[in-house]
Length: 224
Image 1: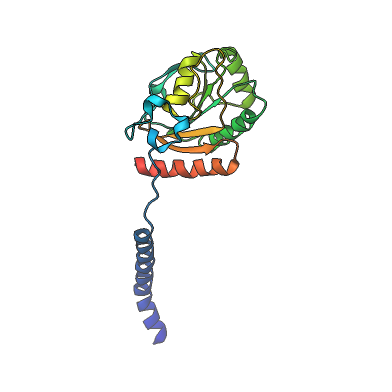
Image 2: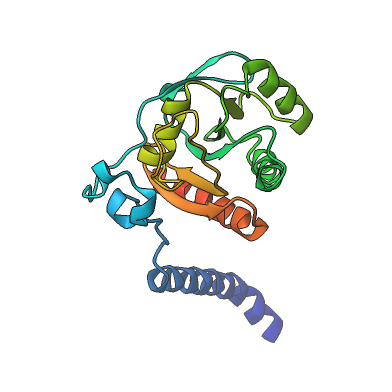
């Protein structure tokens, strides 16, 4: 008698269990709002990192248009990164201090998102005269850079330095991109599909690399 009762009740018990689990999940989601990343404008950043002409801008900041050459001699513009989430940095191939660590950590991101078409990487040379296309090509091959995922770019020094100071806010604002001007930064900058800055990270710190991976996942949910 008890066995028959148990058999009849089993579907009901299972249904009650499923609804209980769903209820717990729903309740948890209601109590745990989705994390959102900040949208950085000039007023949100250390003023020393922002060009004086932009320090008053409170919203709607976007990465400026650009036109540079990558390690394969291909022209790279903002359209290359259209509808993409990407991580940008500034390096030079002859750097023997922070840049090798940064490149290694960029390679970790490349591996993590290798099969993800929504995510790309962009590394700007801060010594573009020395880092010609052939030099970048050799460096890219040595570091295992995959061209469609990660572009190493060179171009006019003033253009690259303007991007660093007026678009990414990655370095101190002093300098005019002239011969004596030199920038050196460990900053990785996360940019969303709308060309807005969504995060700053220490490119030499593996903990921050893990944080980038988590934040990209947040951005992808936001975009969807």
